[in-house]
Image (cartoon, rainbow, N blue to C red; front, side, top):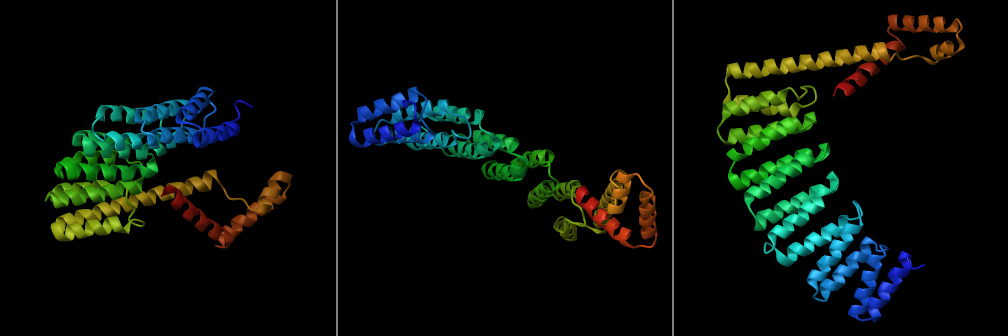
Length: 322
């Protein structure tokens, strides 16, 4: 009974409501010593001390709490601890704040680390150095999962461009194009990179970026990318560069068509579609299987139901390639 969390929660409420501050502190300390505290109990303890003016003791309660729990249960404790510390000291104890963020990030999963990185970088922007803030944004982009990587790199590039100028953002875009793992993210990042080069007056560099991103843009699916490149050549190119753009587009279409054809052959050879009659014939081992197979073949020659199945396979192969 003495380790029952519900009994302890009732006891702590009574001490905090009816007892003295010292009695409540003793009860909370004993609860932490027995390791029956929950994250909510730790938060209540830290806030009680902070309201009473015992700020360092409040931070000590947070320290004991984050040592007791692991992710994701410790998420709220770290968020409250870091927020309270930065609100209290700002940049007065910057090295200590940096150490706290590094501790939190050491074991944080990628989904929770994203917000910590952003808050850490904002601390550096407000009270530290722009160079250190850019380094934190870079770490955030490298640690982001695939679905959030584009947004992380876009934020990193925007922060570098604002702090150091557009020219300094080039290495960020180059690293992003090399690191992104999804074709759609690569093409979007190439469009942003080409827009940056175009704004800087580097037409040839912008054309090179568009040509690089073209290999990831299917002309049958990504009309926006090719329309953007077409408008670029209309405004900044000539007949030769426009012809080169069309040549690249045809080569990408040919490569994509070859991939679809290969996938179609793979489906036809390795994963044949069987009718119910064929399946029953294979299980029974009788002559009905041969009759069903000849029936399917005749249907294919006559362009009947087998043709419909083939069209379905082609659409399935196209989705696999995409």
